[in-house]
Image (cartoon, rainbow, N blue to C red; front, side):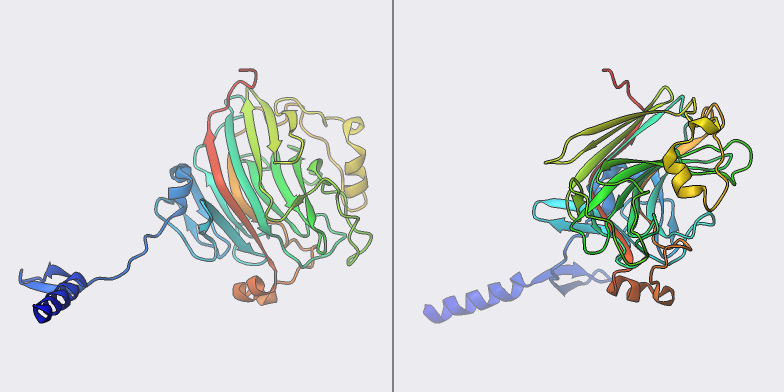
Length: 343
């Protein structure tokens, strides 16, 4: 009886390790079970991916993001009970025709004018910014995590949301830039920068290797924060939140310029730009009637001509191994029509 029981267990075990399938002729065959781990795609975590296209840091351009990932650029990481969509891009790679900076960044398929509006939200944490660059260059060590981009005229950017952290600092800064829709040609364009937590982009080191003092109210790498960009009836409403930090709100009119005269140009702009190029003025109607769209992800700012960041001959693996990259994780995001902020 005992021997019979042992034989039955062996037979059961052997069959439990196999599945019955059929070959092309219909004959039953035994197929070994395989342990298959289900791939989780960015579109499983943030389901609005059907509304976007993407440009990756290696130059890959894709219109259909449903059930798509590319390791080392656009994929999912799990942390405890939370899935995060990872956007990762080197300092140097293949990028768009209008920028030297690489990006793994979504571009909204739907376009809109400010009068029509739209809303973009995101909850994220920046995991890495380039550790190479010059401390006295405003764009070094920074990444843009959300944008409004114009798609006509000068194709300037009425909004860029930055995270920047100097090497050796624990805390970094979150700030947003408004780029003027320049009157006439675009040679006099400039960005006006506003701090959220920490510094604005005009705060730099005294020289290439000396960083300014660490911001006291900054955001650390790996510290989550959220933003809401709500454009309603031509007014841009910005809200920034992070646990343990004051919620900060801003309002900016996209239909009427604050910078249409020389007298209206802020001192920040004179200090940052006047020594190196003409400082222009903005057209009075700013971005009124101009087609815009949202962008979200990791737009690495570390490959401008003046940043002097290390790019290791453009070798992406070497850049990743030596800190010359940006990496941003999003756990939540939405896109849709603008809403009345008073409701």
